Length: 307
Image (cartoon, rainbow, N blue to C red; front, top):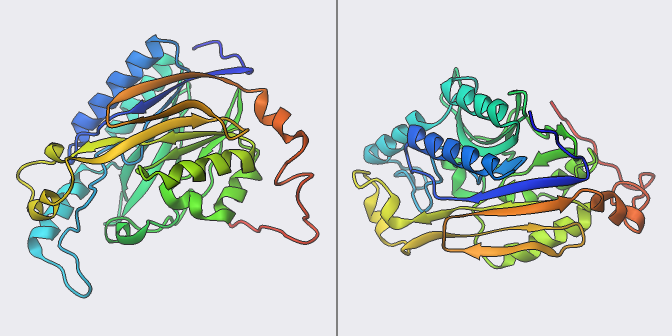
């Protein structure tokens, strides 16, 4: 296991394209990046939202209000089959990779319930001992609700690290102000955001959150190309109208002052490396601590049902 210094966190932020609808190939790609980045000294390795088996941007799976189609159902079942059951072989491989490299690994995946038929948009954080915690997206955004269900557990898990507590909110969960506060109340120093937000307004959002929470914001986005969709899907007509680069990335790291540690990178697969000064989150709270001396618990309180 690596000797992790609490004052410095060496992070690798992987902006990569998943292998859409392919659980094994997406996992193999992730394992390759883990080995590569750990070999370059990374201690925390972060992947985007739904990296296994990819985010099916632009697809509707045959749904319209009050209607659905059998070809769309077949595409959904294909995505269902490519989703991951927690604790199965894919998790053993990621757990082993964390132990082998002595790293913390954050990765988004489509979680398939082990008993029922519901999928969840989830993120796992693996620890160097191979253990892990799962966060399920509280509220899938817009038409995501056709594919994934609301979280029914794993609301705000925190992973204790040498650099302080770290946690994640997935994509537009960060537009749920009380969800952010739930993480702030747990003292997070590194706020991981696996997402597909390549719109320019998102950059203002993440700078605000870093300042508000006095934490590092890890903006983990991906690249998705139209040509990467399987050619034998039933929903090709809806994919054909999309741009050649469907998701442009824009991954970056923001410090607790709201400044870019690394600038956004667009339209390419890459790994962003940085060394984070972990004294900064506490030092920045001298004048502003949103859940401490800059709060009024006698006036405003957040009650969290956290199970």
